[in-house]
Length: 99
Image (cartoon, rainbow, N blue to C red; front, side):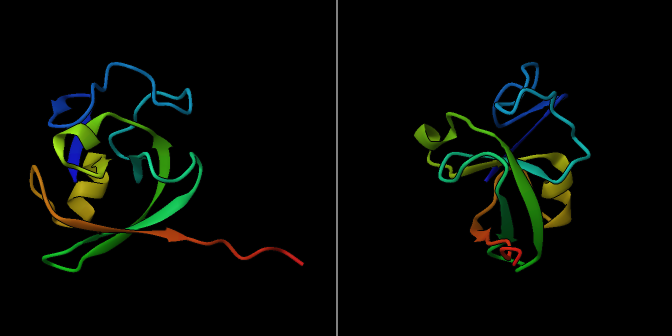
């Protein structure tokens, strides 16, 4: 994982709106992820510390060409004790279907 923010960072440019049309919020538990649709929730776990957080997919990005699978906001980064780059496990959260 790499991170991105309004202040810059290793990931995608934060000067643009996210793929969902909203501006990037550094204090939100959101991620850029290409392997699931926008609006899905994922559990992001730091593979070293095993700290975990649930985040919403709000953006996509070109980070895969750099060998990364996800870009995370500073809020996600800090919640899982990630530095500039860290190895993460990403799992889809399946919502229960109402009866």
